[in-house]
Length: 201
Image 1 (tube, rainbow, N blue to C red):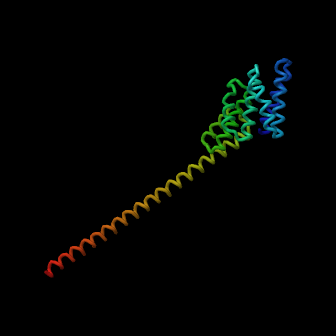
Image 2: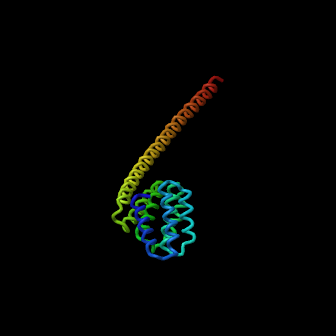
Image 3: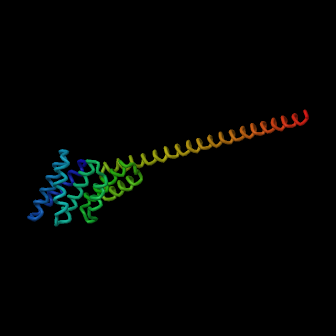
């Protein structure tokens, strides 16, 4: 998680904890525990904390924070499919920062999978929600550049492959032509040898 995402998560947790609603406090503290474990690189503890809340939270807002935290943990462990599954579960009514961050994390996964066009779309969508995210702006530009570079290398490899095909086709044509000439010469020698043998008798 970037510093911005951590701050957003902690601010949301603080706001939820300060509402005075008794049912939310234990869940908020569990998310806070998961966030602290995540920051320390204790992935298993973070996963357990976020899972407890994601599976049992009655409040949709708290559940969205837990889902996002769980997805971030999976992303840190490079479990991309699990992370995407949890990111897809974040509600469209979630806090704007959570939605923007979820799109950003999905963009990171697409970029790591070298799906640069998809990554660009996800970073752009994240910026539409949170236009101040410097990380999303930087990664959008990196995705666009990577996409252009990938297209260039594909076009180069295609042109070299077609040149290779042309070269092998040319070689085959020359080989066939040489073989025909040799066959013609062989036939001419046989015909000449047969003609001289008939003349000898």
